[in-house]
Length: 207
Length: 133
Image (cartoon, rainbow over the protein chains, first blue to last red):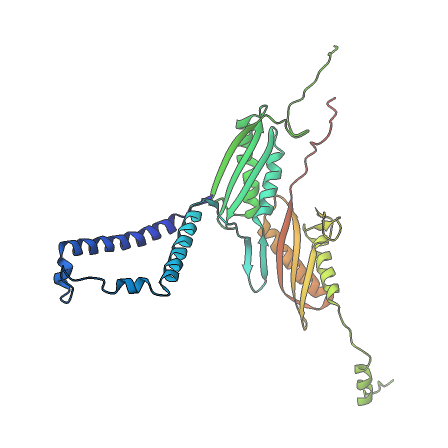
């Protein structure tokens, strides 16, 4: 359910790799003197390669140009760094029906997620749940985090989620889930009032 | 007994009797009433200026109409019971609104856009104290 910047990383690494490879090849050619032979009019060893270099760098716009290039490189680097932060895949509105002639039916996945969450929290022993629904209406991805208390029958909760909660969502969407993830967390919190199957009592029982 | 033939003057009189204008609000109310009475859809009730309102299956859903001549496009915001096949339920809602609004008002409904804004899971009798015996 997390989106990583794998494709951007690969693209930029390929671009940087090509640039550094080209720079390396150029350095080897210069060092070996092949470049001199390849380019006929290239200067000899004793000639100054950058005649008038001081004039070039002491120009009026040179510091500003360097500054601009530095800022652009800095922004690109910062953008790349921020792109490394994993983020949840954006959930678009579920388009249940898309027929321009008769009309469109849409439903926010959050609406379905809250219905699933509400149903899950009604199960005995469940004290909280977080439900995320992503993907599309035809290929929905469901991720659930369910918090149970110490009195809960965890296997029972999982079974009821698989046999009741998930089938209800599938019947509502009328398509099978593309992926389904379930995480169970334990908490010392007491269950919802009336939501648990435990009956605590104190006193004397007289027969 | 002979029926007097209609003279050109009489026809002009009929034209001058006036015209019937159907307010857009009438279509909106008709559509939302049809949605509430004849389908599973509900609206929202309570709250103040839309703040604090809650889903209510016995309330009328919100509907807005765009009218072009005698052809209407509707946008309906509804709530539905959960679990229920949403595609089937909304298709039934669309069909009923199209048929009934056309039948009741004479305006041809071409398009009904539906937004499902909430779902109502079944309420279980688990809250509060229960008598065990």
